[in-house]
Structure formats: structure tokens, C-alpha cells
Amino acid sequence: MATEETKAQAAAEAKPKEEKQTNCLSCNKPIKKIRRYYRDGKYYCTKKCWLSFIKKSKTENKE
Ligand SMILES: [Zn+2]
Image 1 (tube, rainbow, N blue to C red):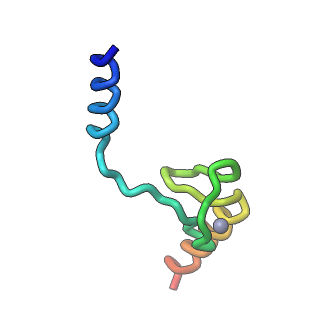
Image 2 (cartoon, rainbow, N blue to C red):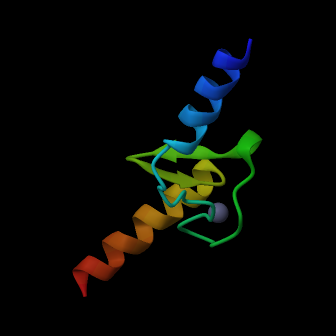
């Protein structure tokens, strides 16, 4: 069916151009989909990276 094909194509083009976060906020390495760790709307490669990012931001706030 040609109609369905056009519909799918339009939906794909209508997607908003949102910049995806592809790098870890802690170590800045590219995040792999399988091993990513999601927290507070941000992505990290592991829980360890998230913890170190929290630690880091807390230290920065103190000084
Ligand atoms: Zn990381």
C-alpha cells in the first residue's frame, strides 16, 4: 500500500531535531546503548560515572 509508506515517511521526517546526548557527562566518552545509565534526565556510561559526576558537581558547588 502506497498510502502507508507515505505515512511512515512523513512521521520520520516530522521528528523534532533534538540533539541527543551521546557522551557521558562524567568521562565524556561516547555512551553505548547497551551499557548506558540514565539518571535525572542525563545519560552516563555507568553508575560509577554518575556517582563521580555527582561528587564532582558537589565539590564545585562548595568552592
Ligand atoms: Zn562515563
